[in-house]
Length: 433
Length: 154
Image (cartoon, rainbow over all chains, first blue to last red):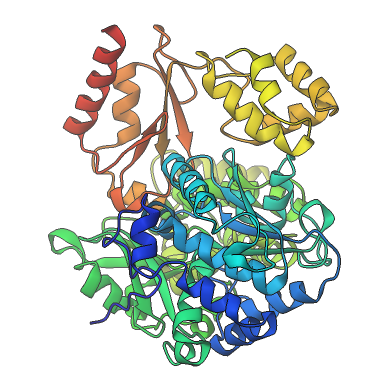
């Protein structure tokens, strides 16, 4: 019983397209329960749960909601971030395709507590099935009176609108996402002001990930205090893990925080196929650290993950076996970021191109010692000076491998230019210099 | 569907731009947007033309280059890369005799590269139009492609 199914409890037991199945299995009861409480009581319940955002940054949900509740400016918006573009993550798609009403119910609870009147769900354009499922769920919810005017006979009106992304990873970043809903290119904004102060169309906006909203009904049902008893001290509750790469059973698994990464790979993933060995694991996605096999006993926990100078928490575990070279993996990651940088700020736009070029040198056996120093400096500068999470976390894979796989870099430098032709080229360059 | 018909479905609000462009583009046989059309959209939403162009050039799913009837997107991020035992990209390139970003002579297929398609549990994965095909191997890929070819000739 390593799995703890709270957010995913209904999945597989109900027909996702059927609102009747959802209601018959206790759906929208959590909303009903919330509506019987005052807004302050709902906020306190969420505060008791010590829930942290599930999209990656791990910001305390109650703090954000309370800031939003205090804003007197109207209209107020709830935005659901369903732009799941981080390589290796697919849990939000899993929730949308298998239990769409749970997401709507969570958004409704958040809207009631913060006095918001309209919700946008921003779904990435590649997720055709999710777009269809969510559109259908909204129309069913409206028909049954769970959305629209006077929900449950209360003085509470709320409408939903779906927005499709159009192929851009950076739109998963909160400000870029808001820009995209407004019909603009996904260029991030400088903060503060934060979205709860000036968000969508300049109005107070609460923006959270799908999994975060899906957790709110669970907290309403079991109480915040009971929820906080699950998991670890810094990370309460459960987390959806997207397990992929070289494992036998890839998939989404819901586990309490505090489980070792190795347990997830072995107990759920069934280990690596064909008796091969794990060489490295990338955590969180392309923006996350790459760690060696000997570190897999590390537990899944916000504090432990923060040791990598990167906010990793979307919950991807990508297992890579011993057939692969770290520079193959880094090359893919670097190509991804140089393609997806929005171009607004210099450290990210220029940095990612240079990062890719230096990694290419290592990949082609053409790296020198100064390339390694340059790489280290560049990664630091990008991490510290980029405007948004994309540029700040793009060099995480490089920073972590420079630390844990340093010998691989040194070995590559040693072997560079040793092949025929390379040596002469190197000599030439030296004499010219 | 004609552009005018699509425009009339949307209120004259700038935030409808992306939805509107996607709907119109995806309904066209060539799956692309032309300069004159973008000017019409800009006029309808009272937006500067430069804004509409900047949006089209920013987003990967919008194109100003004519494309084939079916768009094949290949994911090459790490989860697909480490599960790809036969090189999906090269296999498709040699089957269709085109490279990434190109369209077959008969106008049936366009090959594109896509960032992670969010189906890493089925890796390696491709997406053809709106359909995901996962757990690919060489034979499965051949079968999928011949199915598309026979449907289009029928």
